[in-house]
Image 1: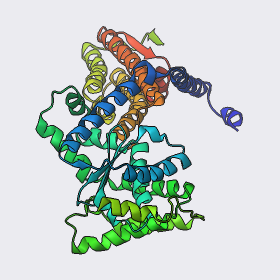
Image 2: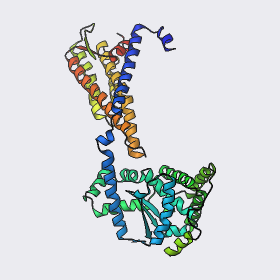
Image 3: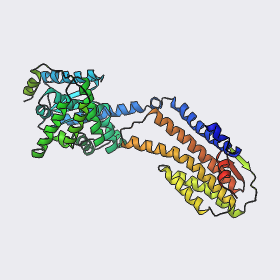
Image 4: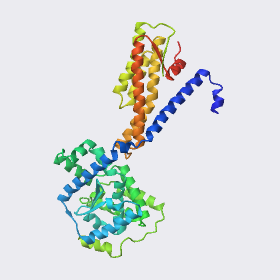
Length: 276
Length: 143
């Protein structure tokens, strides 16, 4: 076809087409050659990012932890670890990198800090009617970690230079508190929340946990939101819970999940008793 | 890549200055408009439109300067929106991104050197035709 068309084109135009083609080939050849180099390793991009994330995560957790009571009860941790291990092993996620913290608080909240710190408040566990609902929230927060939403949000809202200054101790206490508040009490944007929800449903499906219960949890807390929302941080900071429950249900309907219990019958009620 | 040809008429001092300015215009716009690639093109386009009724020598060089900006516009715009998506969305810095940006920088630097060289020689009254762009300009710009 091209050869046929070229017969009707003047020699000068042929020359122009040939030169443009050569220019395009040259561009893609340079790009192809440069693509062979591992620039991330050469510029140590990942190492610098990971190191900053680790310092930030540990710093934020230490500061948050200093004003809160962390539950250290072995039985509580054993039950929570069983849920976390089940989700991680079913989804090929490195469980060892996730640092689970259970914090005594009347606020229904769970959030992820940099360097894979997963914080769950006792009130949120108490609000869950069954293990599937709790697994949904855990899955949602793991999804934020796996998609690197935590650092993305921080870089977007705080800026990389400020974050690096925090790790080197050059930022004031006010700035650090502002960042902690941002991480614990405000949501990611709608697109990231939806991505985390859908990923959480996929995690639950692979873990043979019924994702519909996660949608029920959102719907139930969404209804409570209108009456007494003072302590419902996880819902307040994750707006449009009805809409979220709707697309979770839609996503669930596409799957055929054969749900199996993760914990022994009495373990979940035992967990709630231990936290009271 | 750059050919020094004899123009069929001897340009006047005024024409030489205007033709040389078209390259300087694109160079200044390139420096000022690096974050927003469309600015380079607009600046060169405005200069081109302002001189489209000028003499053949001036028009020819304005067209060559405009064409060189046009090809870089696509390269730089793609890089610009890729960078924006890394800053504001979940897109991450990857080896592909760094390779693309380096390629774009290499082509921009070559274009900048060629522009400076052409601006200097055009100011001396010499007629510089770029490889590929010179032929396209010859096809578009008629006496």
